[in-house]
Length: 469
Image (cartoon, rainbow, N blue to C red; front, side, top):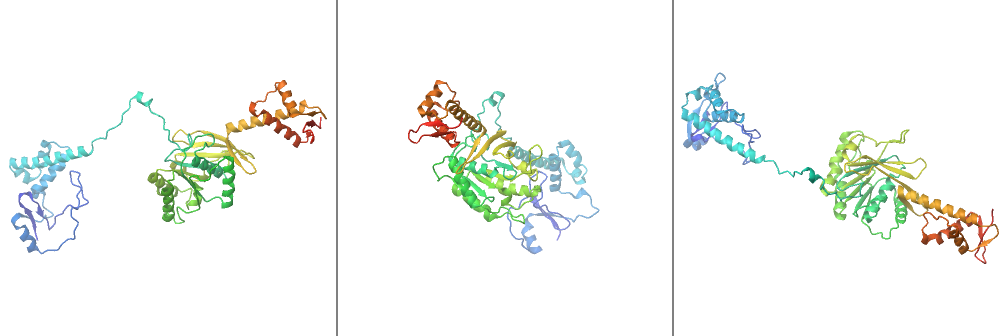
């Protein structure tokens, strides 16, 4: 079957030694060819096809031979060449000069040339207009210099000056540097809207995914922190998940577990999600960037983008060097994927600690210092300002006890009232001891001196007397 040309520019029937442009090719205008009606190809006979096309046939197009030149180009091909030159920025004069390379074009009447050029120019202008329409720049909010000073502070936070909404954060330290303890108490503070280490928190539901501590340890820690925070209620939006796997040993996302966490996020309206420690929840090589990026894109950032939550994960660090500095273990991608990172350093044989900001995107606090105070039934975690205040109070109480003992004579009995009046007459400086608690402080000092067996109390008169000079 030979090639056919249809009348009135309706097209061509291309068969032998001809190509047909189809998806996913691109038109010279820049537009892509697309399938409009995706149906199966039907086989028909040559006679059947020619019978359908008979009313539209103009002439046959001879097969292209290897030794033929471009003189055989039809009007449709000339139109395409002109159009491609227009898109290259050529002028009409340059195009007509170029087209003179085609014998068919040079032999054509001026009316034909003008008509073909006008047709191509019309399509070109319409296409350019459409492109301009599609690429209209978006409207920008342009502020002048004065407007910058009017920008209001973003008051949204999880922990003010520390952690912010919709961020991914890392807390890392060597083992036994209070990493889990600090995170656990922070979640309890956030779930109740209490201050954490002196910083305000926004009350919100939290989900703590723990794979580090056993149930007994968690219960003991919870009870002591609960007592240390002087909490009254136990129904707070604090939720705990024990263990789980985000990425398996073959580096596949564990979709059932990921989905299970999603359901808890939706059910409890979780706003802060914590993994302690992250490495316990995924098989990954912490030195391979591909593994870290998989964890970030497919899990951590997935939760953040889909549910608008904040994520905090705990991570181990290297051993402290000679200057007592340590860094997180593994690839630099860890620091690259987080918005904020804090390292924790605990003093040698001390319960005092310091959080240092290793990465900040929102102007977070550079250093946070505090101390963990372990009682028989309580655990208190207090900021450095309170540590100093407590040390001052202890010093003032010691000085009060020393002054009471100094004022007493061995064997002579004193009423509590006498001791108080004597101190006031001396204008003793009670320091941090408030006026309303002077009486109770004196009673505590007397009991302390009795415990040290420096004074005794007469069981009959309840008076105090010094036993050692």
